[in-house]
Amino acid sequence: MALGDVEFEVDGACITGRVGGSGVRTLVFVHGIMVNSHVWDPLVKALSGTCRLVLLDLPLGGHHRPMNPDASGELADHAARVITVVEQLGTQAVLVGSDTGGAIAQLAVASRPDLFEALILFPSDAFGNCPPLLLRPLVQLNKVPRAIPGVAKLLRYRVLQAIVMKLVSKRGHSAETLNDLVGELPRNKGVQRDLSKLIAGLRPEVTDAVVPALANYTAPVLILWSRRDPLFPAAHAHRLAGIFPSAHVHFVDDSRAFISLDQPTSAAEHILGFTRRTLGQSQPNRRLRRES
Image (tube, rainbow, N blue to C red; front, side):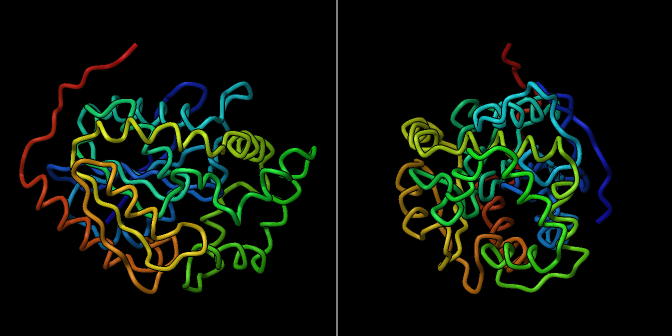
């Protein structure tokens, strides 16, 4: 499926992305830290021809266009940017989040449940697991001047890219794929600055605080989790399912956090089955209310 480039003007940034496909449903994809929308590419291929797909490149470290220097990197502000994008799309969307993007998705549906006709969560930051334990050294490094840019520059080397990817994916990936995923992070000071802002905003109290509001999100929720993962415990999938009033949980074998890379066909089957079963051919709301 051919994807076209798109831009969205939001608070403090111009969010780039890709869009393609058509259909009743619009799926908006939100990736995680230090990658970009290319993390969804194999899944998008598997979903080809089934719905409209909007893949955002949020300023989480793997993006190409930095935010304004004074823009906030807090998770709540990234969630507000996703909300603005959906308002600009002019239709309710199914929000799909993974990793840090899953935390952003939780904040977005809690803030504006009317915009999202369903939520799909891949393994994500949740509860007190923000950031996950194995990534917490980044929080300490971020307190050392110029440490994060130094780490980012090392990611120009394929061997280090591959080592980092082993945390989130069981598959081997080509040099081209790895370069696509990290974007401009090894080279662009503005992107490195945005990553540092994001890391400063990764606090367990943020994901803990949103939990009570999630119980008010009554739309269908699919929790698609890897059965064994070093970053995101399977128990969190069950805990999330116990909070949302209408949640469905499926576990995927032979995958780490990036199910979209490791098991794209299985993920696509679960997504399509979920949307058909819970949403059918119902028409999403295309007369959205914008909040000032």
